[in-house]
Image (cartoon, rainbow, N blue to C red; front, side):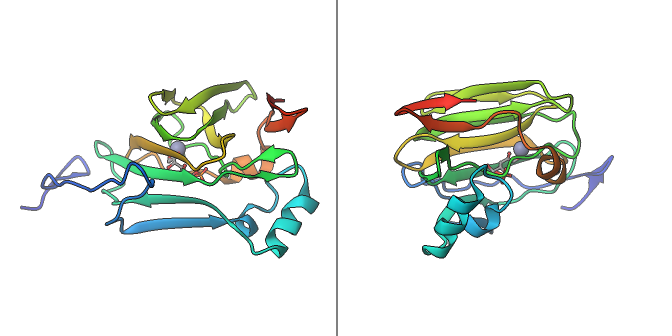
Length: 191
Ligand code: F6R
Ligand code: ZN
């Protein structure tokens, strides 16, 4: 059967395997891989990032998806796996984005590792919330979001968001976030 009502496609139900321990979807058809070299312009210490790139360009993070139509009514979902590490004193993080449809939120359920979801509004209000196993972060509509790993194992989370949300990376490339997450005197500091 194939039809749409008001632009929302009919789909048959399906099931997806999720590897909670390793942070993967074994049958993912979308597997996004970001290495250190994909993160130029995001970290404060550019020299430290270049040194990391020269030293084998390590894996930074992966996103696994079995996509659904990018339409109102559908729910996109993913497993995000962010490696542990630092660029200088700044903990590894994802690029971060607004949703293109700004009035769409997202849920992140922590599965493994520990870190923060750092968030900002278009007018520069900042917020950060802890992510860890058994914690669910609610990212409300309008908030740009980026995850940061402060643990020594991969930060794995499950996310779900409206299918038509879309991703706007450009505004974060231009604006950055007001605060980052750093190791300072042996402590994790959001500053
Ligand atoms: C989707 C979402 C996550 C991130 C993923 C990678 O809306 O927020 O799936 O896309 O954690 O982070 P970014 O997109 O910042 O590279
Ligand atoms: Zn998002």
